Length: 258
Ligand code: COA
View 1 (tube, rainbow, N blue to C red):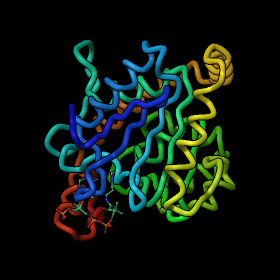
View 2 (spheres, rainbow, N blue to C red; view 1 turned 120 degrees about the vertical axis):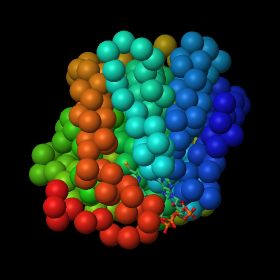
View 3 (cartoon, helix red, strand yellow; view 1 turned 45 degrees about the horizontal axis):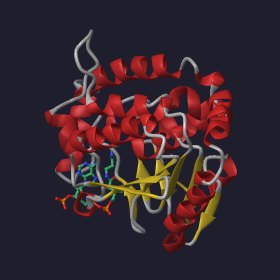
């Protein structure tokens, strides 16, 4: 269990908090494993009625740890154990109870795509979402190649997924990705208050509601695996190597020969 994810259970609400401030809450394999374990156990535990995922007032998460990507690129193989990131994605995608996210500061890569699997998203007015996969020599993950166009239409999704530039809380709310924008220091508390309301409701009705709402996403687990295969191959390719080395060396990447 990684200390970089705080796991707190109280009054029917399981809260997972990114807690790696020195690395902007970048997510390591150990952190994915902790989140996957917590969500998988919550699925089977009738005392957990709602899950909240949050960061701090300053930062949600800088996305996948890029050092980890270099050292241990996650690969989906034939058979064998799923890498923790995919265990986490499958756990949150199929989790039948409500999931709420509170997002302040940067939400990079999977920090944004995981929100497509949440039911309610509350954002601080300092939230900055980004999907820089192409800029890293990669491709969309977490089902985002379907879920984002389904949410906002092809052209807007293409802008976010191809250019990879940050977009901010107001635009995210207007796109339908965020339920409400709040002052940053209120976002986590507001998410908790909404979670408390849901925790008091009849669980079977909430589960039926969510299951019915997600029927059109039946193909998403297969898509996550397909995206994962392409992502894994690209991660071993020259553009990703250049982009990640450039980030580590604090310089601009040079794709001119790629
Ligand atoms: N993986 C590993 N380390 C990361 C990281 C990541 N995704 N994001 C940030 N860090 C580290 C930095 O290397 C730096 O470490 P150092 O102090 O040892 O040099 C530290 O966290 C602080 O990051 P810094 O870039 O100085 O913070 P910032 O406030 O200027 O910018 C971000 C914050 C999130 C905008 C910026 O860090 C960023 O763009 N990170 C990369 C995001 C990314 O590409 N994620 C992968 C998506 S698939």
